[in-house]
Image (cartoon, rainbow, N blue to C red; front, side, top):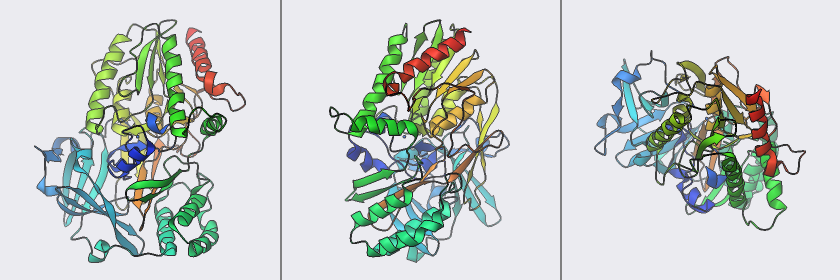
Length: 507
């Protein structure tokens, strides 16, 4: 992915998780959103299977770290193409600088090296131009393209002293340059500037400015777009613009009860109830695995079941490399155990995303051969090439009997790119409701002062050239799961949908 930072959900509270916002990078292959079921799930980061064999990376790929030491070829100043960022790569991590039209300023964050431990790089020299591609593994496309620059300009290293109006204008410029989906989401960005600029001029505090940012982003309905006001490394307030129909139902249900104090905890209990309901139907069950993300077993009628709620954070302190290994081992175990079933349900109906490389591991257990899944390109490429993602066989065995893929508008981010991969397979039937329509990678930028924004800046097209951002990926066979007209849908909708899928399989 070419976005940059997102959040790691390590502990029980939103505050603790928000502290780690600076530590994980969608730019390195993660998709995550920060609103639906915060404790349930991450990445940055909007993906697929292997890369095109014509790409030059597999043969030349080298580890970024050898015995914990950064390869010397990577040290020094770079431009991160497609993100509007400069990077000074040192032993302690990647130091960031934001380029916004006529402005350039240092980002207070440093991307810590452990996040990309296990990643690979390839270096290319063309005349005077040096570029480096960063890969989560040898068989995934480039996550980041770096272009060597002579130096970080001196003015970029000077902290930007800014008024509330200056900060607002940086915010505006960032979205104007990098947000990819104004048209798809019906946002008339320039038409709202005059009013909000006037409000920013009159703002008396950072809290006032945060309210203006929320007003600017309030109708985006994009789970990768939001703004955080932080002080001393802790969030004062966080707004995510994602607002699909089922999320509105969840929020309304939370507001109508008094037993659970936080929406965060309420959403965790919602996912847990769905998982418990699924387990009650399984004749034999794995139980919840990988920090509660994975569940598999056998449904009535000898139908296999795999439920997956995230594609990241499978163990405390894990990164993409470790999570890929963990999901690979568990998927191999599940696929082997379910080989004797007549069909299988892959349940992504509540899936909050994570890492694209993890999605590739899952989809590869169902692939009969290599197929193009989708292509990702940067809205403002700055010379970064489009990246083709493929779904291809992975693991010792693949499940090639009928597979029923179940989604809803709570299928978000990497859950959606996993959906794109699965839909390319001829034995897969996509059932349920359209996905959330928030597939892009998440780009994060710090503003001058105590603000951070995230936005969707990369465009995915499926193998037929269709962009599903903003409207979701439509199922082949519609099955309502969370019906807004049914007061009991959050409680019983998922179980009813499973019954309907079993009916389809039994026909």
